[in-house]
Length: 487
Ligand code: ADP
Image (cartoon, rainbow, N blue to C red; front, side, top):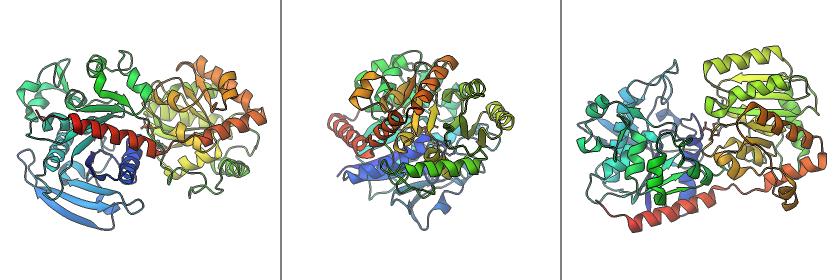
């Protein structure tokens, strides 16, 4: 039975800013179901410790890289049984604000130090120096916050194998030379074949250079990031490491996102009881102050208000479709200008446009259950979860033709219809015109009842279980262990 240390900067339900948190709660459990022994390592941000009924102290570490004693705790997530180890350094992690941003949405000024220390602690555990009774065979890091781990482990004798997953290549943890010095990283790494990155250095690059295997969260995104328009400066290196790079699609957590058992929605349903979905729609319209019109196509949007997600394009569509019967249920937060534009539209088109600024897990479920369509016009999308949740909830997705969106949503055309696979609509590119065209196609289909039912049932029948993804990760762990040669 392999032992895996799964290192992550967020994990649902303890701390979440996006899809990484969902993956970090589902994948370790799915790996566990494959017979692996998995520990998830997370910083003890403010409030995280109180998310557990019981915490066991595992030990403490005194490090040259930290003025405080670092404490390690073990807790079990009550609703899932997931085993979490917490790195507790209150001055670095226990702060009022988010894991990466302060209360004014500004990056914490010492993020490089916070996550470099997190990586160093992960290495102490990986080498069996922190908790002597447990030493992993594989360390699986996620995103730039854990990027230094494969590099630091390369300095050790007989380190575990490493796998690193890129959830979004646009976030790289890039810092200046003086930070490199402050972090006391080896001088030899200030090199274009190591961490140096156009005159700065990059945590993410460290992982791509040093990890045994690199994955990203969909096959299409794995291809896209090898090209200059989506590789964010790392495309050359990724081509160089192409043999080690692959894409494994994320799954959907069936306990959390299942319309039949969802405790956030009033009328549970499945593909055979879609009449209940109509009741959820009615209820959502009432709850959000939308006109109680059962035939109005209700479009859901949930996510970060960021350029990546094409929220500016949504704003344009709301105006373009102002005279159509469409209704909009929007939930999200992020860019302040986009938040303000959205608020303005909600006021201007009251009864037709509902905007909830903030983070609301239950409302996200209610929108997935109550909406007819789900719009996700991302400019790039490593995997994307909401379009998969939509498919699962019989809410037909309209997506841009990019990354994980094309790996999960099958565009409606004569062929896919005949094959019984069509499940949604692609906009050919992330532009307002392409999106308008896709919306028109979707609204036409919405008015064709038998076709609409077929589309929804096709999507609901699709298997997005974590089981398959976990098997693919286990295969890679096996390969990494077989080929892993300590430097
Ligand atoms: P990303 O990780 O790029 O933000 P994903 O689609 O991979 O996007 O995952 C986003 C996750 O965060 C989904 O589970 C989505 O439901 C959730 N989410 C995003 N914004 C909100 C919000 N405002 N309220 C509730 N859930 C949200």
